[in-house]
Image 1: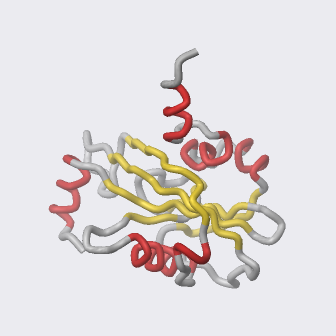
Image 2: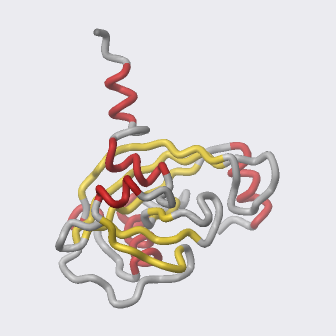
Length: 165
């Protein structure tokens, strides 16, 4: 892990690559957690986490799912690629003024046969399972999470916009 000041410099001068996890229960509902941390603090958001420089994608996915869901899952076996997204925030993890955060997000869908009894509390202090319709209608669900269900903000939408006529 980078020291605080070096990570803040990275956030200020670069972009982060992350996984977001669209976790569904057997009924098709989606897991959202109330964010403890910036950016998106105070909003309901899907679980996720950044990919560290020295990790390959399967290692990072296993770490992120362990940290966010309490269970290490395998990228190639347990998840399906949902899309590539861009998230831009005006704030940052430290709350420092005039420093935004820019993410490129690999969104993956996960279907759980068994729901964990306890979910980690570090990033989210409450959890809910919402149908996609409920999720999109809820004003406290962050727009970036809603985008996974209305295809706004994905690179596929952007690519389609470039196709003439």
